[in-house]
Amino acid sequence: AYPSSLAAGEPLTVATTPTIADGIAVARPGDVPFDVIRELVDEVVTVSDDDIARALLILLERAKQVVEPAGAVGVAAILAGKIRASGPTAVVLSGGNIDPLLLQRVVAHGLAASGRYMSLQIPLPDRPGQLARVSELLAIAGANVIEVLHTRHGQGLQISEVVLQLSVETRGAEHRAHVIDVLESAGFTPRVVED
Image 1: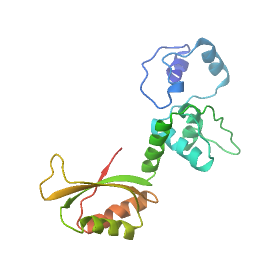
Image 2: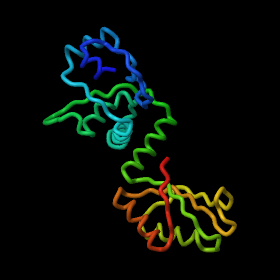
Image 3: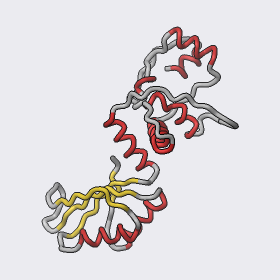
Image 4: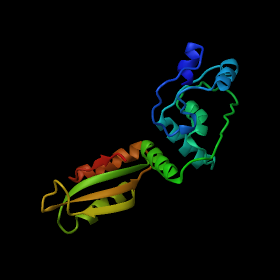
């Protein structure tokens, strides 16, 4: 609501969209906060939920800080290139009100977005040794398997095939592409599943 309200010069009521930063997702700015921001803030920028998730992950990994999504938007804005920072720069981190399940999803999403985690589905012929072959290829490619689900029953599966669902850690986007290439070069058809 703030960008459009500041452009109009008065608090406006706007439709809100779902966001992980629910602490700042207001339909209408309050009169007092609006006046303070209009007087003291040089610029208001917006960031996406993906930007916020990336900031939360970096704050958790590098600074060992658990911050609520609304409190991480300043870091998100800098990381997304929305604010030009030169020289020493301070960002206020505020609030630790984050649901543990949301934090878990944010971490998984952030790792996937940075290419360090992926979920795969691989159709396989239902023959001995196929699971072992995929595991061997992943080891050769340097990927770490986190979770395996081997399914024989499901919609669209033939009687002679199974689906292997894997959660895999990788070292980044380039390594992730390499892992997929290794599997495809061996004749498998992995499909990355977005969580």
